[in-house]
Amino acid sequence: MERCEDTLSARDFARLSDLVHAETGIRLRAEKKTMLEGRLRGRLRALDFDSYKTYCAWLLEREGFAREKTAFIDAVTTNKTDFFREPRHFDLLAQTVLPDLQESAAERPLLVWSAACSSGEEPYTLAMVLSEYAESHPGLQFRLLATDICTEVLAKAELGVYASHTAEAISPELRRKYLMRSRIPGSDRVRIVPELRRLVEFRRLNLMESDYALAHQADAIFCRNVLIYFDRATQEAVLRRLSHCLRPHGYLFVGHSETLHSMDLPLAAVAPALYRKTHDRS
Image (cartoon, rainbow, N blue to C red):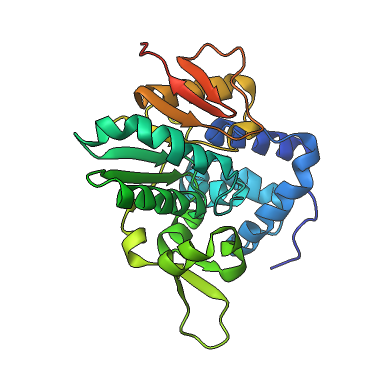
């Protein structure tokens, strides 16, 4: 294979940017061209293309895109998360949201959905918080759904193996309870205990889909630090679909840098970056 071209042409970048936006809702601005080149370089090597130009020509054909769609989306999406990221949200979950939902939990399991779960730190954090709450509130049942558009990070999330330094935000008590150290001498890896892993159902889902196809409405949805990658029209469309997936009076958590200000949604602010569904609408 010849050395691949170093850069995307402006025309091919614009075409790929439009494709990324159509498939994921993410709008890549011109300053992201170098980033996109870096992320696609591995796909050129894997498929033995000698240039971005030939890769783009193939990708934008119907047959090429059908074959490459999942790998392309995996390559271009950003996956950044941590255990107990924006920790105030987990305090609000335990101190405000779960007590409010306690009555419903007596009738059926609560459903909590991590709607952009990345490599799994958020849903496993939720599993810890919910498990601790359930221990002190007998009878509370819950289910955890975790979805993401990227198949690579979903596979990592299901495995539940992480570098030990990533667990520093977890309290020592919870680390002892919910993490296992590797048996391999010198390894710095930890793994979520099987009991906690079994609490989370992982599934691929693209927030750009018109129907999220949840079997049941969720009591609480975490969709944090995702909306910032969308333009306003896409943000509002995604939030409307998420609202439809919430039970009446259910809760939506978004990132602290995200706002629903002046959007026409059936959601009312409860606390910073926390909203509650006020009513159903068609």
